[in-house]
Every structure is written in structure tokens, then in C-alpha cells.
Image (cartoon, rainbow, N blue to C red; front, side, top):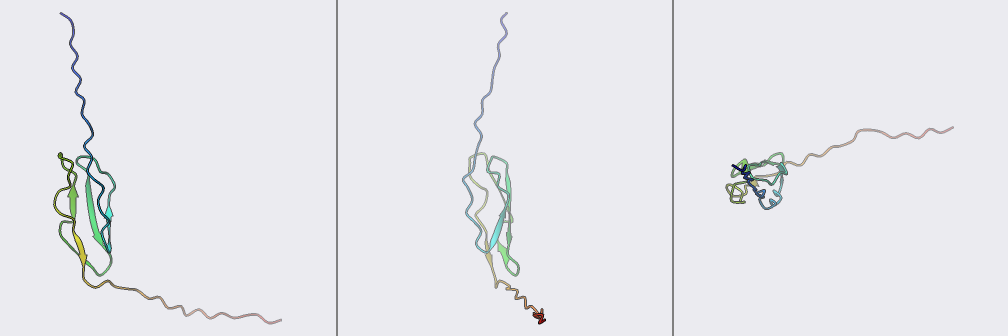
Length: 88
């Protein structure tokens, strides 16, 4: 009896690129099925919505994109270094 070989060919499932998170960061850049990205807001802001999203088998991301809200903290650094010029 002849040997029968069966090959399964699957196409990589890829989700659409995510929009940038305004006043925050999207951590993770894998867009293939099963990939998980994490969202993080800038200092002083809080995340509204899911902290993570997953690329699903149908090529869509789970949940809706979160947003960052609140008042952003702005840090100001003041220098106290005095500059002197040597005179010969």
C-alpha cells in the first residue's frame, strides 16, 4: 500500500496594527494570533479600559482600546549649578 502524506498548511493570522495610546505606551509589537499587548499610561494618569488585549483567531483584537485620563504630572528640574569663568 502506498504511503500517503498529508500536509496541513495554515496561514499566519495577523491582527491590524494598534493605534498609539495618547498619553501612554503600548507594550509589545507582535501582531500574530495569540499575541498579548499591555497598555501603560504616563505618570499621573490612569488607564480606563483593559490593561491588556489579545490578537484573536479571527484577526481582531480583544476588547476596545483603552484611554488615559486624569491630569498629567509635569516635572520641572531647576539647575543650581553656578558657572564661573577663570580670569588669568
